[in-house]
Length: 258
Ligand code: PTJ
Image 1 (tube, rainbow, N blue to C red):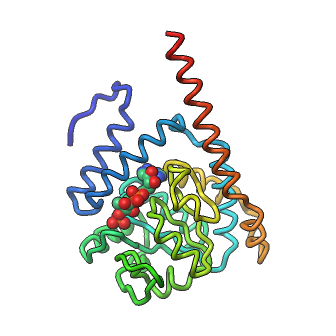
Image 2: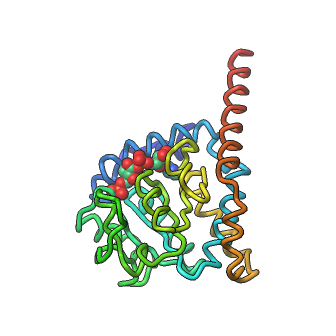
């Protein structure tokens, strides 16, 4: 790996890039995952690389929904596991969610490598789903359509970090409640989801872990569906876009003043 000096102004970002690149060399991240990461970085930059208040709110509600639903699933792909494997395992424990590996660029080797990463950071052996592919998401012809009957097939609620829009739409058609983590507030995924968390995946999951630990109110029973119904995802995403627009105007003024 390239040696990055700790005093480099973009140290964290560069180290993260190195991890993603190494993940690709190790056969965990898809090649296209590098491009997806770059797009995410650009959007994160526009947000000021911090959790916006709207995203924090969405994270809190998402945790309450995941904790209260009977069958919630966290769907994992290559980028997610390289960026936040520990967080995935911890959030799954705290919300009693099942973890399922579901890949766009699916190969048995990648499924097995991603599963191993999760097991190395604490997932119990044999509990991570995905390899069996004994069910299908109707209307989704890509490899992402292959899923586990006991996981995504049976889920009430699915958390989908770094998603492509087709699957979010197909999951909605199946009647699932979809929560996405996607830095792009304009993406089809964000617009299709019931609850879109426009935040960096690692940051989002860490915030969600804090909420999950704090939220000892127990389950909300069937009321969690009301919580989802009352969440106005479009208005919420407009709020994120307004923050980005304000930041751009602020940055331009700063530069104009120099
Ligand atoms: O591992 P696989 O085979 O399932 O492939 C995964 C990728 C990511 C290649 C695949 O799902 C893909 O092509 O995704 P897209 O369509 O590029 O969408 C990824 C979305 O995630 C984009 O909207 C990015 O802005 C966003 N994104 C990228 N990095 C992050 C992110 N969102 C949150 N946190 C990030 N670190």
